[in-house]
Image (cartoon, rainbow, N blue to C red; front, side, top):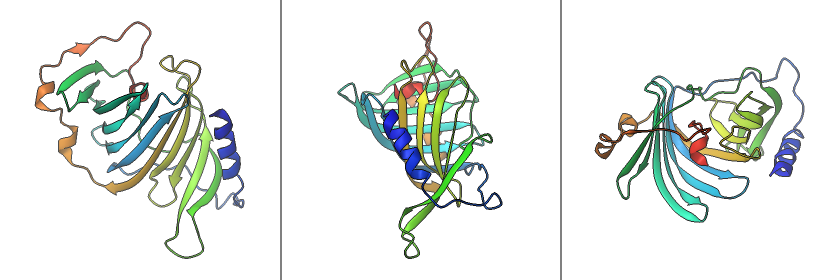
Length: 221
């Protein structure tokens, strides 16, 4: 996966250069939208597809996933409520609910202000109008969370397209890579998806094991 990352970064750098005046600036995504995503890890222990809802106003994120983890099928929903400091891992099939303390702050979906601009490229074709999508590629690192990251956001609207993230959090031994792709984004979200189902009302807060941290990325592992 490391070779894939640097190969991808190298290919993205092949786009024609922009002058300093033309260079895109880091941006922040809309406050409220929904979409679909795929996620996979370097060791191929996890792959999943699903839908998500993002609410930056109330600091909450919903994920609905179907996939495989360690060769076992999984169907579950995850609800991050950052203002309340909790995360719910919900199994809609057997109606079970795990409630854990959320040990991270809410970070808006955005290109970090200190990210390094890599390139501006067209996904698809720019031969005719409507055949391609203009995206900006960035790279950098976030101390104590990642070693390296490469992210792609749309030029218009600042919607996420791709994230390649190398984790060095102790929930990710050996600095594992996580890949997330986003698509079918639509402005707005159903507020009901941010409400835990009735069978979660009696869920008690589960204490984390020693040395383990619950954050946005740890639920993928």
